[in-house]
Image 1 (cartoon, one colour):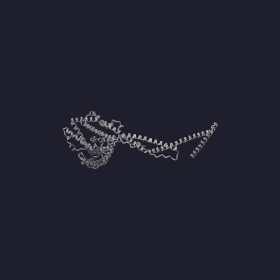
Image 2 (tube, helix red, strand yellow):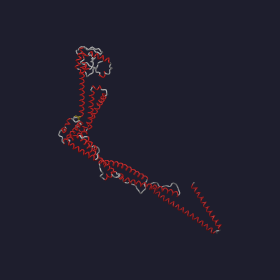
Image 3 (cartoon, helix red, strand yellow):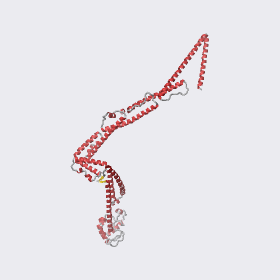
Image 4 (cartoon, one colour):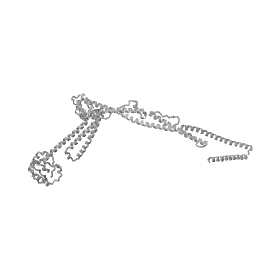
Length: 572
């Protein structure tokens, strides 16, 4: 539709051109006629006009043909360059959609070529930038450069892989740099602690050079880690030496009984492990060793005190203690000191190796002593006078210990059996196998309880016989009697009744501190006469002379026993 319109419009323009030319020629003829130019000259002038028009049209046609040729040539060049660019950029060749004119085709091709050139330039620039970054990172990390063809144009996939590679290098650099900084800081601290000056080129590069200039290769990182381990090992060894010197100093202080003022003078070197601290500790040890040689007897006696402590902690029997003869020697020589030092070292090591077992035995001993104490309190009659709630607490603790002791014994038995299998020897406590010792303690406890039980039964039997023979007294505590309301009239009456019998019983009043009451229980009189009936205290009571005399005699003989007891079964 549009093409038809254009063709019609072109034809109209051509017709108008012809009409315009015809008018121009007619106008020229009119001018020539008015001028009077002859016909032959008119023809000549018409030929000239025709020639001018023809030359002008020919020139226009030639120019348009030249333009067409240039467009065709440009199309060819653009197509060729476009194909090359598509090949370099690894994209599909350009295809013109549908039919188009030469001019439009040339324009489209030229536009596409410019676009491709721009893409090629951008890719080359990015490639160059990535290569520069890769070179810098690889130099720092001591890695080979990324293999890429600099002369060709990289594809989008190749650029993406290159970017990922550079990003990985950056992450590697960051992690290695962080590791390097941390190791460097620890190395510097260790060197300061050891007063160590960098003496190799590598150590100087690590400590003194700029961090950005250090090569972060795997080899250098491994060398750094190795250097740090060496310094830490030296530091640990130095700390162990210093700690050993401090332990030696404390031990010598205690043995030599060094006063606190002298100890405070070296308090500054009792911590840390620098070279100067180690040197100061060694000087103090040398001084104390010399002082020890000058105070041989005092030192040996201090060691003997420590030996006795370890003997107690290791549960040595008397035979085991006597086996170390130098302990009882009186000739205080350097050789004797060396023997004591060797023995204390042996005992200390022995205790440390079996510390868990000894602590378990010690725990059992403490629990056993506490259990025996609670057992003793449980058999004490005075515990019932307690009003603070301790009786209930003690009973709970005693019950708890009765459960704990067997469990503890079973645990120790298993551990001791394992220890005896490992060491192929018996574990001895006080010269006796531990489980035999435990069994013996329980047996002694059982025998002691049986003995106490028999004593109580014998005592109760004697007390019953005495009461059957002489009667009993009220067992109500004096505090309970104090709770009864005190009526003055009744007190006077009671005192009056008591005083009526004072003549015959005046000798026993200081023993009892009060009135004597007869037991309401029927019993045979000492003479074997008939039983006396039960009586109650009514305020008026006629004592029997014979009975009263017998009571007086018996009370005088047994006053010391009866005064410690309170009789029960009477009504006041």
